[in-house]
Image 1 (cartoon, rainbow, N blue to C red):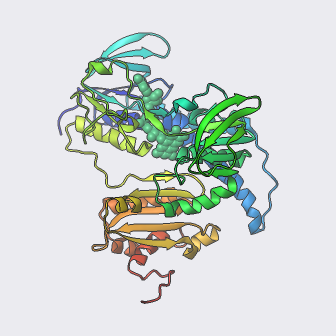
Image 2: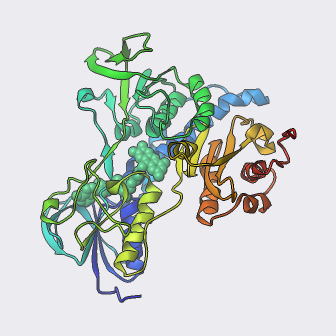
Image 3: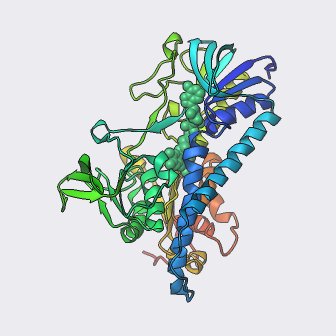
Length: 473
Ligand SMILES: Cc1cc2nc3c(=O)[nH]c(=O)nc-3n(C[C@H](O)[C@H](O)[C@H](O)COP(=O)(O)OP(=O)(O)OC[C@H]3O[C@@H](n4cnc5c(N)ncnc54)[C@H](O)[C@@H]3O)c2cc1C
């Protein structure tokens, strides 16, 4: 290992990519400065993304379960929602976690600068502090972790407090009577789930023929059935042609072959049509960093840009725009700077949609295999055959393994069902460890748990799952 103790490292952006990079660099003995406009590290993920959305989804799930409980002989009255307390609970979660990162930062002696950075040259940053003052700082290496922001469709740009993006939707200023979610991706569906549980009549409009375009269709099916119940309407193959503010709401004009009502008034509209990388960093043209056609900063497998002293990680370098991808890239970049022989080339980056039911997948998907004309075998275990799913009254789920038909090697995993987001980690481990179906089937899983569905889907591959009877052909 080379001596890195004298290296001066700047990390621009304090999200899960940036702070993971800064902390590892400090652990490896480097001299680290972390620059971000917020009071503490956290970025989009902690301040206005993963964490606040999951805090609210937890409450949504509780409300939903309390309604469902009458099927099990327990009846609750309708929940009374105190928005001020709900907001302050969510904000408390954010404060606790970001404050904790601030403490970890200090403990590691990371110099945290609350401000914004731009380039003067490949090795000099111009930093403007939030509380005033500007300075030029020199570094040996700079890691860009500036993340992403909500994408805006110019034709749908309407400057009105009734038009929300994911950030303002998470502020939870009120619970509108009616809410239109534009975009059937994971962020729109998660936030739609929250507002529906709190009492809004939620409609979702998606221009493609299905929700969650990136996921295998069999995983989306049980979610479709559930959201059809909790949402007022789901408009597929439909685009929003225009929006205008009227008294009492936003009048939305729809376009598409299946529309029943061309115009409809919604109290609020949440536009959730994807995210854009924050690659418009001031002075970036003074470096050799290259930005690709979709706005992502171009990097190699060590996360190094075309400028030898500048690295870039996280949402700003490409899909999937997920927190765990960002932090792993951050750690890889730091190791590369430290001279370790590393490359960011994972076999499985898990994706989780925290709706109810949850959907999660990793590695090869069926859709991808079909596109690539790749031979696979899919072993599905329906949760109707799971003891644990039955005790939870959540038998609509399914676990599937995507396997190499010859060797039985696990190439991918997909799960739909309660807690899928926790279960998928087993798939990641199996794929990264090059596990075979036999390894998964022979690993004793605790009973009664949903994790048994993973083991039994491996047994399905051999046609010998204990709880699935398949007549011999
Ligand atoms: C509503 C919502 C829910 C989400 N849920 C999940 C989830 O459940 N799981 C998941 O994995 N991902 C989720 N994501 C995505 C996740 O938040 C991002 O993938 C992740 O935050 C990316 O991390 P990052 O480090 O690349 O950048 P970010 O977290 O975007 O942080 C970038 C930081 O850089 C700062 N910055 C930008 N420019 C400068 C500059 N010039 N100088 C200084 N600082 C600058 C920004 O202010 C920001 O603080 C969600 C996102 C949203 C919006």
